[in-house]
Image (tube, rainbow, N blue to C red; front, top):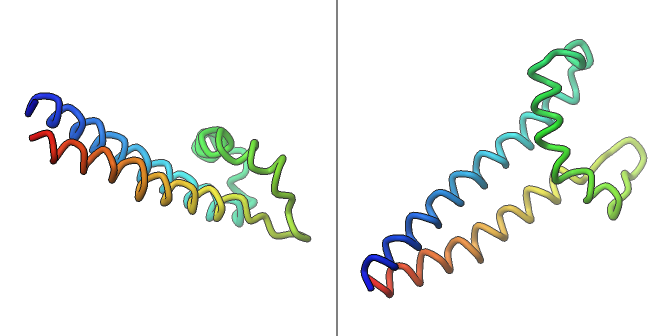
Length: 98
């Protein structure tokens, strides 16, 4: 059973790194949105396309209030919840199976 436990711990670790990386992408996208001079740079377009994978479905549900878009904040909160619930559960199950 320790092999299955180590597998679950490994999967949880990789998922945690991916979630933290995606949170970083969302934060960078939000910061770059305040800089109009780099709107058409390839780096900005790549970051925006990665961030919009999650932000566009959220924008259909949560409309901007005036000029303020809260969807990056909501997306980061959802990712933190997934980290605390799903990934921590995988860690705990993996540790119990060791």
